[in-house]
Amino acid sequence: MVNDYNGNYSLRVVTIADGVEHIVQEWPAPNANMAADTYTYTLTAADHGVGAEVFHVAWVYDGNSFNINNWYVDDIVVTTTAARGMKARGLEYYKVFLDGVLVAETEEEFHQYAVETWLTAKPTSPK
Image 1: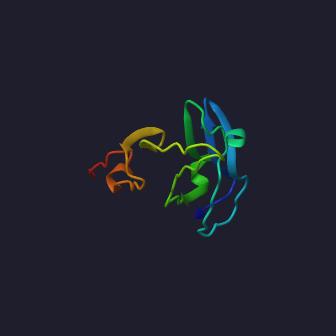
Image 2 (image 1 turned 45 degrees about the horizontal axis):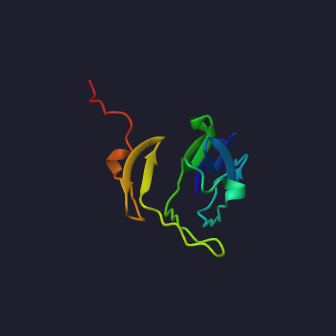
Image 3 (image 1 turned 90 degrees about the vertical axis):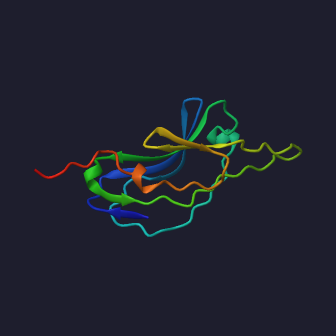
């Protein structure tokens, strides 16, 4: 869901495989609120670099942050399936990033950010 203010930005979901970015979904110029929706993607080696030595999934905002109020991303699920005739590779653990910084490594499939991790600046007291 997007709470738009002024448009003039782009949103996308990408994979980064060994330093190469692959677009999974792109919203090139949203200039209105977007309702909550459900998206499901099947990522492949050919199209998204699955199986690379270093692999990331990222939600990318490109533009002046003044132009958007909020972009809500939640209920992310990552699973694996076996290719025909192959044994499935399981995920050993999940790395959780916030603003490009590793904040957790977990064996749990579900992770919810604690509210205190949302604040990037220390509050100041009024003078």
